Image (tube, rainbow, N blue to C red; front, side, top):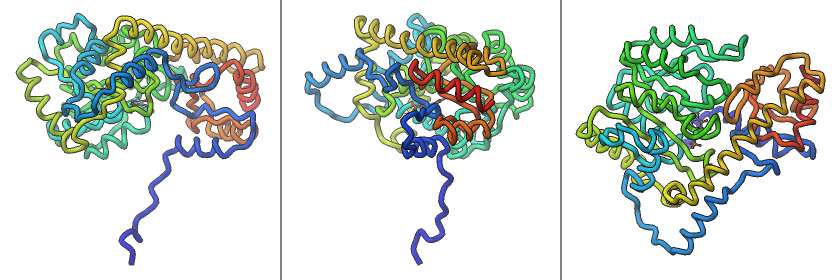
Length: 398
Ligand code: PMP
């Protein structure tokens, strides 16, 4: 008998499966709104000019490719901290934040989860309902039981604030609470500053450990605006975790550039925490890759390239927003008998469109338009060439 004869087929990743079906579709009019990637007006993943410049300089320098320290490039880690906490952050001045380079936002979540498992072996992890589909799998793989807290309200297309606060209160004390700092994936619905303050008070009361996941900084309202929740938590005095990613904001998906930051109570605590996070990294992949983080650090630390990046990030943000407005308008023009104005209020790359699984299926079968069965569409995959056909199709399946 083969060693693997009893191995069961694991369930397919629903979104990657969608991509496979899209690629196999021969219709020239097909549109993929199922992706989690920003496409430009030409329908391509952009290579940012600031990135191209930094890469050119790096190639020309013919730098050797030795191992990085376990925690990654120091200049990168420091640049990440400033972006998240603000250049004039007191926490940073006090040396209370530990930041380690990570293999994308996913790697940051995983290192954080593994460290937390040692710290709080019996804790429950709570994620939003709904959430990025990997949150649950990732924390379960680290050995935690994972629960949902109420978040999205399908009736108002907004946040179920009362349900959220109640569920956070009812979690066992010292639970780990994963929160999307901005541009909630998959709904596009974010907490207001008042909501954040209310959440923070419950977390404080119940001694929960906040784990802020920020994968879309700069895609919502702006670089600093999107970090408002992180900065609020920074002022709270609570310990917390932040996983961050440059996959989207630098359009560096495949380079796997992220970071884990842990906010501790003192510089002395930070030193001990760093030693433990390094242990987690060392036993997982030893040390991180060089290319992406070198590029990001050189962009963030050069005034000229940084200005270029901020401009390009602004262009991506504004293009998404203009697609949201155009989508609402075109849906109405095409006779959609439903108010879609909520789409314009959502933030980031995604929209919970309110389309049902049957409607999504019809979009695919009849029009070659691919979306996630939950109704999540990637607004960043819309452009002026496909907007008309997409909105016409949606209006027809409603
Ligand atoms: N968190 C959230 C909320 C995300 O949407 C994503 C990416 N889809 C990630 C983390 C992971 O980011 P990365 O691709 O950098 O691993």
